[in-house]
Length: 320
Image 1 (spheres, rainbow, N blue to C red):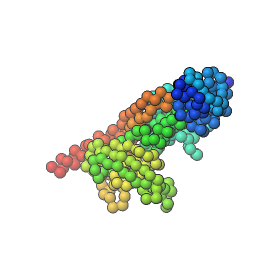
Image 2: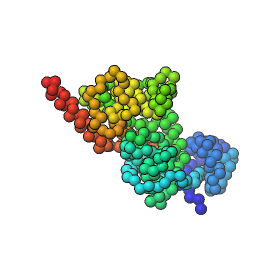
Image 3: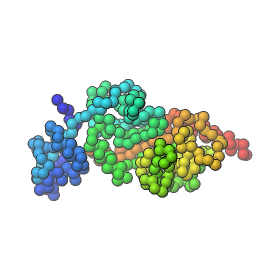
Image 4: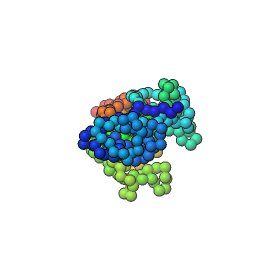
């Protein structure tokens, strides 16, 4: 027997009397055409006052519209017991604090030890089944807040917020040097490097990319930065920080450019790029309540920060 999520419910108002059911679904529940097509194929699907209906019927005031979505599961992901730090979970969302070094989703040749394996195992152990739907991605070496939608409606609604710029994504990064101003915006189009396609570069012919930054602490030869993404290009923060002369400490791909000072080096203090997704904020896809999630600075980056402070202090004493 097929299991269903808790249905979405909407009661038709007087101003909507005479509307087509599909109009109510699109405008009041925000259901996309693609999702609407899928719902029509399920056993329960879309009902009005408990009776299944086609979407071209008209509705009247007081009609109770319900949308039922069949539960799905990721049959191609192996459940695997791995550490999983959960920040929030309800019937629609799972918010986790991803550790550095963990890939989000299995890839060719890397089928285990991913966040997806850990999440599917967690759901199985709690008697649930969902398809693994990460709302966004984090690089393998980037730690921090990551949202997973449990059903296609939740995924769709958050994606719409992202397109509208209503999702706040903030990162903390430790970089070499100091930015050109205490705060500012990097607007540099990004695309693949034609000579090395696995690398992204700032190029006039690239896709629009905008990163807002604020200097939080200066260590002389390095800085702690708070970054907010307006767009979500691959490697955006890493590329933009290198572009303004402040590459991330520990970044093995986007290093300091030729001609920039090679000393001092802080690579010995951290074994990965010093980038952490510290905050994620958006409206709940069903209740509309504003959600705000914070992931504290992980141990390796906290240690790096202390080492940088010691370096700055020692350097200041030497100058005196």
